[in-house]
Length: 477
Ligand SMILES: Nc1ncnc2c1ncn2[C@@H]1O[C@H](COP(=O)(O)OP(=O)(O)OP(=O)(O)O)[C@@H](O)[C@H]1O
Ligand SMILES: [Mg+2]
Image (cartoon, rainbow, N blue to C red; front, side):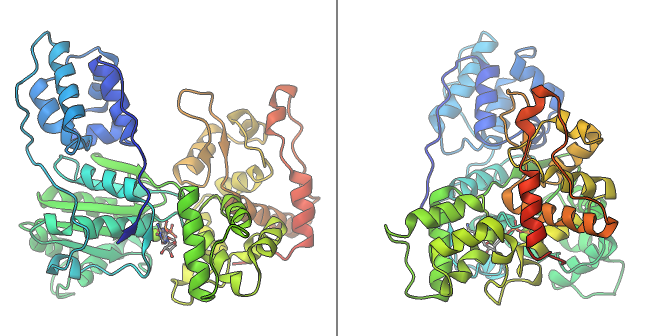
C-alpha cells in the first residue's frame, strides 16, 4: 500500500526518431545499457539509433521498445515513437500497434496466494508512486529479466522492491518470492539460502541444480534483497536466468552485479514532501501526540534537507521526537549528526539500528585505497571535481569505484562538466573515519588541500569539520 505523490511526466517535443527515443529513455530513468538489455540489442546499436546513424525496425519498435520503455499506458506517445520510426524509414505509420504483452498495473490491494508469500511492509510506504510505476512497467513485457535497484545505504531499495513485488505478483503464474540475503555470509552460500527460502529440501543434492530443476518451468519473480556483500553470486544468478526462461529477478544492492542483460534503476532519496510525511509518521509512532504543524514544519523540513531526505536517516532521527522537539533536534543535527541517527524502532534489522552501522556495511567492502579517498573527500563540504581527487593523490579509478558503489554521487547532469558530492550522512561518517585514522596515526588534523586558484570551488569546511569532530564523540561501529 502506498500513499499519494504523483509526478507530472514531461512530454518530449521532437519528431526525430533518435531524439525522441533518447528523451523517452531518459524520462524512464534508463541508460542506453538498460534499454539494450531490455530489448536484447547491443548498446552500440541503441547509441547508433539515437544518433540517427542506424534506421529503426518499425515492428521491433512497436513490439519491443514500447513495452521496454514502459509506454504501455501512454498509447499517444507509443504511437508517436512508432510513427517517428516509420517516418525515418520513409514509410507511413502502421494503422494499429500490437504489443507482445500488455499489462494493466492498476492493482492496488492483492489478496491472492501469490502475494501471501511476500512479507508485508511494516508501515505504509510513503511516496514512490512514480518509481513503482516505472519499475513495474519496465519489468512487464520486455526481454530484460534482471533489474537491479541501486543506491546508497538506507535510501529505500528494499522497501521499493517489496512494493513492486506485491504489485507484480499476480502477473506471474507462480507469483513472487522475497529472499533476504543480508544475513548470508558469503557468495557460496547464496544458492543454499535460496533453496531454503523457496521451501526446497536442503542437502538432498547440489543447491544450484536443485534450484534450476525447481524453477525451470516456473513463471516467478524473485526479489533477491541486499546482495552487495555477496556480488560473487552473480554467476549463480546468471545460471538461473539462462536455465529458467520464465524467471524474473529484482535484485537490490549498493553496487551492480555486472551481468550482461542487467538493467539498473537508481533509487534516489525521497522527495521533500514525502520525507516530511515520513518524519511525521515515524515521530507519531513513538509520540502519538506529535503532528507536523505550521509551527514546526520549517524545522521538520530543515531536518529532512539536512538528512538529504534519506528514509533510514529520517526514521532514526524522528524517533528522538519523544525527548527533543524538531527545532532542538535540528540544532543537534548540525554538530552531532550521527548521534541523532541511532536508537530507532526496536524492530529494525541490526544493521539499521544506527546509520553509521548501515554505512559501515558498505565501507568495509571498499579497498583500503577507496576508504582512504572517501575519508578525504569528506572535507569538501561544497562538492568537488575530478581535479580535486587527483590533487589528493588518487586516480580516476578510485573515484569511479566510489561512484559505482553509491557512496559518492555525481551532482551535475550528464551534459554538464562533472562534479561530485557525498550525501551529508555519508560525509559525517567519513569525517569520523578521517578523525579516527588521524588519531590512530597520531598525525595532525587534515586541512583542506591547497588547490590551484581554478579549483577554489572545491574548498570545503575541513578545518571546521575537524574542530567539530575533535570535540564530538567518535563513532566506532
Ligand atoms: N517510501 C518509504 N515509506 C516508508 N518507509 C520507508 C520508505 N522507504 C524506506 N523506508 C524505511 O526506511 C528504512 C530504510 O529503507 P530500506 O531498508 O528499504 O533501505 P535500503 O536502501 O534497502 O537500505 P540498505 O542499503 O541498508 O539495504 C526502512 O526501515 C524502511 O522501512
Ligand atoms: Mg536493503
